[in-house]
Image (tube, rainbow, N blue to C red; front, side):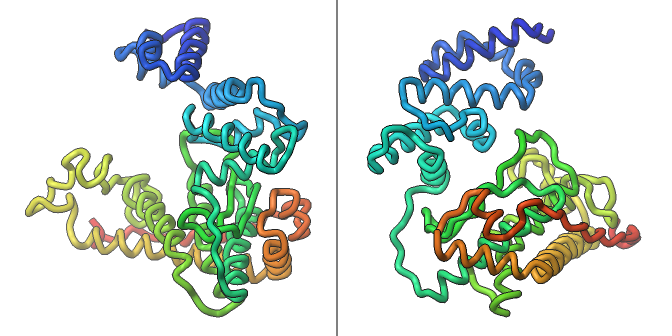
Length: 341
């Protein structure tokens, strides 16, 4: 039986208080094991956002915040962060403000703290001018595509300051907590992931190892589109991957010899479809960046000068004050092949 709206509000309030206290006994009392999933199913994205804002209010209580810090906006750019992460974010922002001799926490302190929480502390790394320039163009490529591609998450920050294992990062803020994804959005994600490599091709006519993680993400996403979500015209509306991975459901043991639950012809078709998605995305990324080379050059130059740019700085550097979304290239229609079944 589903709870009423009033019961959900009461549960949510108690759930939040338990998280704030880090009190697992109280948390157990508020949400019983038999009720967790029914309650979770009824929680909207809006309520999750309100929850993050409430947690941020608790952890910034008594802390002076500058006028440019808005907790609602901060909650919207931190999807996936749990209570402990948000507490660390508030603490790190306060430490940064103290080190900078500020009398209140500013937006820049919060965003710099977010980089540290998500990526690890900044690294002092000496690199050649040529390598630094290439990194600026690499991140610029991701950012330009994020600004221009239909369906892409908005770009709100770009940095070429090394953090953890990353030499640079482009932040794209989801507009809300998503629970399902359109094919257009996934396609934009793959094209955007190809942006760094495409920028290096356009500007330097060569590749580096810097795109390894980008290509891994793009390949994983393309594979799921083909094998898990039925987004291949050639293979059709069929799931060809175990729901929970190689050791999740045991579906991987259905085929002959305990292997995959389909034959070599289907495996070849899967590989071909993944390759097609990736090649189409790479070609589209290059096409967009070639058509917007002045914006790419401007953004790279600004990154080399300032190292980190927020959304207004990105717009000024590119001149894209009003974003002219590019028309997407239609995905090639593929007739289902008889040998793929």
